Image 1 (cartoon, rainbow, N blue to C red):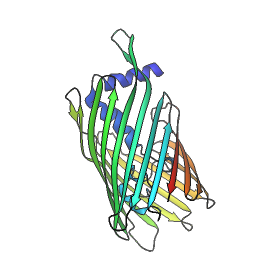
Image 2: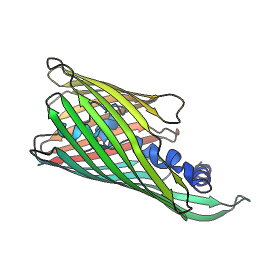
Image 3: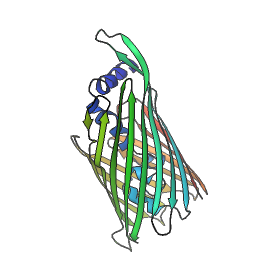
Image 4: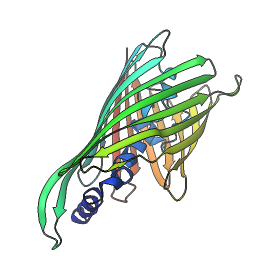
Length: 296
């Protein structure tokens, strides 16, 4: 299994680097960062509100905790030597909104280059690096807006690329007397990627819309998103629910476009530990994600 998957990745990313944004970078970035959101099946366009909001809906950065600083780290572990790690820092200002910096790296170990006779000629690890600057602000109480600027570098064998992209997001609370929020996002509103082979391409645009309802004194949240990615046959459906059974403990479950997901949170202010699990999109076993947040 490992050999066949490695061969598939090399065949896509090697001879046809122009396709790599669809097969490689775009997919892992659209999975988002943050175990809490993963455990809710990726239904985060309306609920994103922590230091990881930049990867889901940057407008949610302005809905963070009242503390001026937040730090978040995350690690994802999947089968076949795949992993993602990230570090995010957010600063909330009094007049200019909230700014966040995020670094993330995806690695795939043990990739094998195979010649026409099926012999392995080279083994290496593929790596994608992301750096993002995100901003979110609330012009007035019921409206939040945000934007993210991303720079991405990919490396696999002797192929490499550098690109950039911009995301936009909005969150709205339509009625003051109802705890309902709506979120809208546009990922890769502008994007560009250049390979060392001279090939250029743009990342697939993704349009997302979601709604969330909070009830039972904000202890229960139910959310659902619809995301349409350019080139995909059908939009992806995300849904999830979260319950704070205790002030320090929350559980959640979700449905990530056909894959079940679940998660837990332990809160001991100013610290927060999140865990999420879901099934792999390529049916290669479970994906585990752990996030750590600190507000100060």
